Image (cartoon, rainbow, N blue to C red; front, side, top):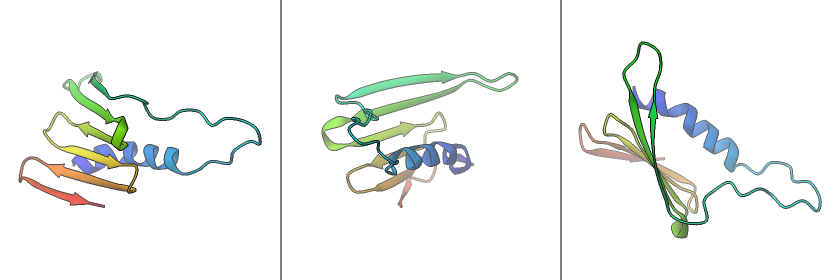
Length: 96
């Protein structure tokens, strides 16, 4: 279930990471923080329980981590082009 919830985020980041056609002479916009960041989101939807997500960026190592309210997490390694899904319920991980 977590993977289906996080899949749109993975697709959005993947699309953003793929080089889009650049315009000659234009500087590409900054898409990642240039310093370490730690943000907590509280997401509300009508008729559904509150979802709390935590997003962290380690700028020096080009790592992004998304902690979901169910205890699972996804780590995006932008340098290596990998993502690691951490499953807290059975204490396993999978690197893709």
